[in-house]
Image (cartoon, rainbow, N blue to C red; front, side):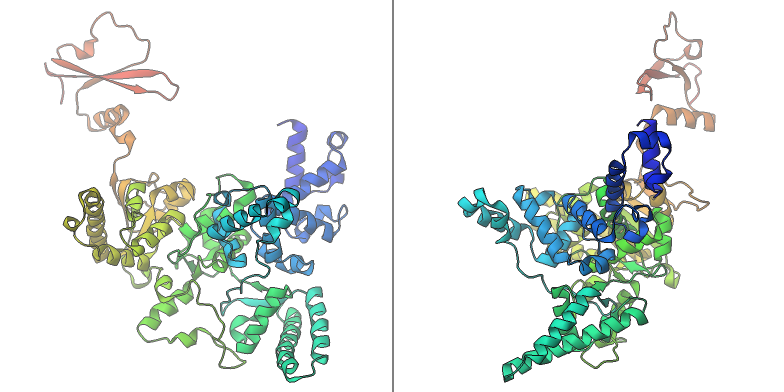
Length: 593
């Protein structure tokens, strides 16, 4: 990178205006080039217009958001839900955003498998277009033949849904109005109410009146609650139906609030779209990478602000990632999981999950998506009752065993381990139940018997650990790739012990003064190296006489240290620089060890 380029990049990342660039840089970088690159920088981060002060003198708010949407659609990034207010005010809804994206992608005959996982899950949630629907739409568009050749985009558009799916709504989410769009909707609704004449129209007018009343309530709440809207749990059944209609029309949007002091847990993933994994270092989809890290590190014991510190991410970005994970059903508040746990013992009824000031029908129309009793029981009680907690780390072979369709329950847990990288405490107990339900190995065919025997070994190990305390299951590769080594070491340090089916995912060393937990794992490769043997010989002052011979050493006679030995073992090893040497060890004839 040239000096000019490095200075320009530094100024753009510092959000400095063009006028503050050094004169020598201005001579080589015209203002149009600076503006284009600045817009691309903020688009990748999905910043609000207020977070790009250096652009205010060069571009207006409408042009900024138009450029942001164009860039994000072309990069196939997630809809920026934290910008829903200004985007919906300009007519850009999640439905129109993903419809436009799929039209462009299908126009290019893109493969569904190349869509990133988290994006695919959101497309299914908003459009209802999954793998099968996408393939069917592509085949139907190509079947139009002449239109496919002459007007491909129109042929594709005919195959996509005309309306969005009904959005899931949770009691703790908030519904907000979209300013100008809401005002226009109120005007249209009032005109339609005034035009109602017969009984059928009057029935429709009643629904329109509820829509109008809710729009007024949302508009009033924008100033009363700092723009945070109305709690879904405070809406009666009729108002919930109105909220869904307004959401479909783009006159309202949903906020999934996440506070720095909140904690979240990850239930077993059901219906997860397994597509392309986001490549490490791909800045376009950094929010996806953060969601994956959140799925691995989130816990009932860890607040959002602590999670941000663990993952070395800004609290604001951590809130966005957790909000998105909750919106997709990949995470739930810890308090919700605790309530579900209590409800099993009869201490909390299902209706208590929603409290409202507008009637008893608050639960009507609310989605139970991703909040079933089984899925909510996915968080550890850990040190809350002073018990011990163990991390059980599986390698890919063990996870692949669970993927062999031995049972649907095992498959669900395997998908969770593959995508999230972690099974929390109650899910781990459920995994044991699934393993215990398998028939004995002798009842399977010989080709499958070895896998079932491995499952039996997992059952025995997991059962022994659960008798001693709480257990959480991790996938070793996820710990190595979805989090940095330091973050992984800090995460594992919160457990009383770590048990691995293979070597430890990272060196379990003291981090920030925290003593590493005891670990039961296969030895690392370095433990069997010649250097490790030499270190043990020196530390214990025992062992055979040994010498190190660098590559290129020529011997005209036996080294004096080895004289008198009955035998000599020569061990070569590759050095870091690509050269090799050898360690010679002698035994017998008065030699040590």
